[in-house]
Image 1: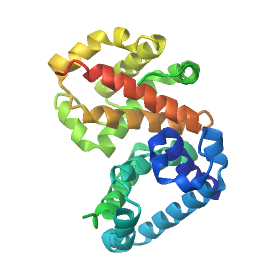
Image 2 (image 1 turned 30 degrees about the vertical axis):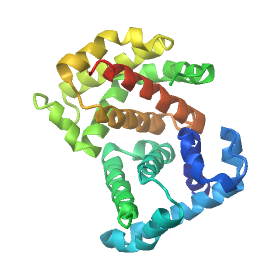
Image 3 (image 1 turned 90 degrees about the vertical axis):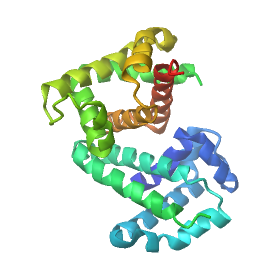
Length: 127
Length: 142
């Protein structure tokens, strides 16, 4: 599962290369294989997924759970919230690859709601 | 935005596999679309949208067949989809945002059915290809 999880961040940087703008300090992102093998990318993927794991434990208060992260993404990281939607959809695709048939339309619908809610919580402190 | 040779090759070779399941892929894509993005159902008030409905299957087939046409003429998608482009501009007038939603659901369907083939490069190629198809279908809107 750990391997699959770090795949997600790699995919975002490959499928939507303009998202690389946030990762200048990550070193070699020059090709798909460079990205997939980059240890900083893998480490960051784990960070993001751990954070999502927290979200799942606090589904009744996503805004509270992500308040600080939201401020961080706005004030320090300067990330356009549009990117949260891109990442959410890449996550959904990676889940489809991992779970195949089990990732039914109904399961997907639940996850789409989840990633939309997370994206919204992450943008809630933008000003 | 246009496809590189490598991207074109990925699409065409995956299509050979995809076309053997074309009809069910079309149906599944639409099921995913209507469940995840219920607002898209507003374009189909005249349809029975229950899973397994004949109309859903027929429409799914139509959509995948059109994608297939684009694949077969991958160097001239504009030409291949010209009539469909006019249909969407003058008759259907589907809001452009929905093409992204349908493309995403098709990608998820492909990812679930062909996990081994759906590498990061394949994902990027398909995302780009469907972007081009969407652009063609909306290019006559105004």
